[in-house]
Length: 230
Image (cartoon, rainbow, N blue to C red; front, side, top):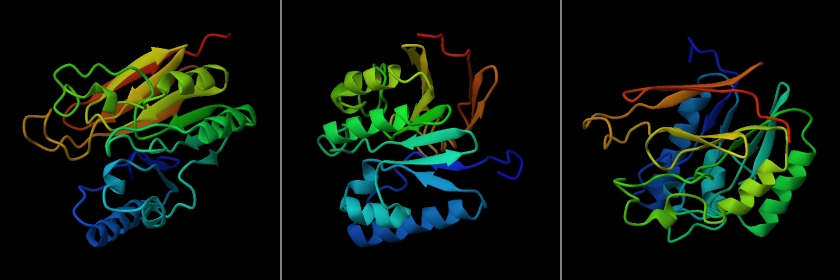
């Protein structure tokens, strides 16, 4: 972080491997404190493991959040943090409720400049063939009503990129001209030869392009040209 000097950190959720409510709350707060030591604003979304033994209000308190979905303005950019556990699906998958979808549409319409959207569960169409967790249950790999949410995002010309976690491996796609990037896991070793993946990324907003660099044992680099006009 001293080298990268980021404007902020976005924690993509699944901060812990859930054990029990008391331990989970303590460990959630520990992660929050360690990230805060970097000295820049830290924003967090909720992942499914954050909610395995904690009620949503408990997980929000541990993460220092008042609301599961929120916005934050960082310079000219607006960060939109989605609650993709609205509700959780079978304890692992995600969805975005109608009220939140309406809030998202209003939030994007009111944004002063470009928007970056973050949520734990992906909003694109991930290929989970051979996936350690989701090959046999693809319905839990991404937001259940993702097509509905993508339509809202496509209708907002200021959306520059959409980011997710959940899948434990890094990938990208493009829908409606919008880049969708999934960043791999920090600790999972399933796709990195038995060693923790150590994935973390830096998002750099142009002009002219959106650049995403992911470090760790499975590094990746993505460069997206500006979104074509509607």
